[in-house]
Amino acid sequence: MTNWNVIASIAKTHLLTKIKQTSTAAIGVTFGIGAYITLVSFMSGLNQMMDDLILNLTPHIHIYNEIEPSDRQPLNLYDKFKNSFNVVHSIKPKMNQKKIHNAFPIINYLKENENALGVLPQLKSQIFYIAGSIEMAGSLTGIKPLEEATYFKLDDYIVQGSSNELHNNSNGVLLGIEIAKKMSLRVGDRVQISTIDGGVFPLKIVGLYQSGIADIDAIQSFANIKTVQRILGVPQNYITDINVKLNNIDKAFLLAKNIEKQFNLTAVDINTANAQFETGTSIRNLITYAVSITLLIVAGFGIYNILNMLIYEKMNDIAILMATGFSGTDVQLIFMLQAIIIGIVGGIFGLVVGYGLSNLIDNIPFETQALPTVKTYPVIFNIWNYVIGISFAFISTFFAGYFPSQKAKKIDPVTIIRGQ
Image (cartoon, rainbow, N blue to C red; front, side):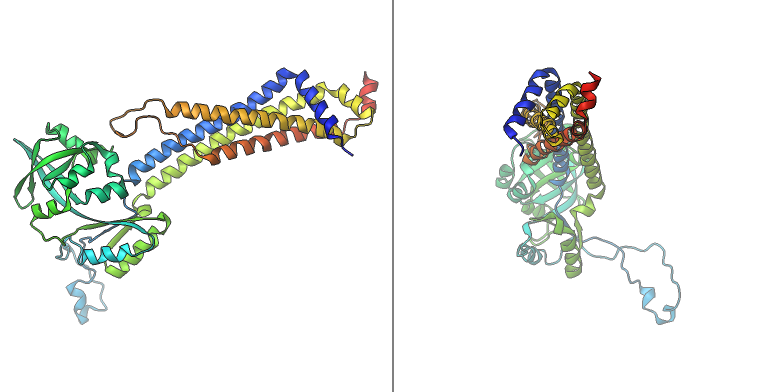
């Protein structure tokens, strides 16, 4: 019967008598786990920041009425050409409006979907910004500011002002920061908005908008949807776009296809709209975890080498133990227990070091004009990273101790003692 108290005492003695090697092995585990926690937390934060930069601005489903040529041309209506191969050049789009027919009944219908978190109408229009002698082409989007702030985090991209100020001002405009710089405009100034029909309307700048994408910030501005309807001279049911936010993003593709079939509109899901971006995110995550796991594996090999050398140095002790009645299994357990102790101590210190370094990075100032709301380096504290780290510490040290201990188990004590 195995005497665990004696085995634990011998394992403890071995570790303490070789404190330098024991410390080196434990530090190897600590470094591996700490580096893994720090790297994964930091890279996950960067990936999340990049995802939010794009995905916060992108609806899960974007519904609009796409202007395109008719599938059935007049030539196809003649029976005499039915069996012929017809080629029609310079096909023009069919005459229809950009607005969505029966937009509000569609919005109310989508709101009843159990997976719909928010359904928001928008009105997009091409305009010109006029300030003195300066004239710039741009885009004005009519929105419901408070709902946009709730579902699409609009306030995170407002560097001056707020969505509430835009909501309370019927003649207010949220101007792209690049437009404001080029036209030397500030919050509180007035900018003239000219439509493609030639009408000019003065709007007060109540805030500056910065998405982090310069091309968008150089043309984009926002106003209350009723304000844009008034500028364009259209009724209150005139809507060009519907943005849908879902509880489960994975259902966006199927729901978008159903909307297209049911309402004869174009519906683009977020995965289709950002296919290349999703691929980049997957590759970044793959690289992060590949490098992190490599660090853990390197730490495991370090422990293996140290325990392997420890066994060779303890040949005489092993021979004496086996000569005094300890079985090969008992000897194996002694060295296995040493490895497990190193894994536990090194793993715990690794978690502490990883958390400390992650917390340090999370408090380092990080300011850039492209990301106005980010003040420090992004770090994600995910409990599963710590669970994976400590689990890998146990597993790696277990196998790092198992293989050398197999050699110790098979040592012939007579051969060792005779060689002395």
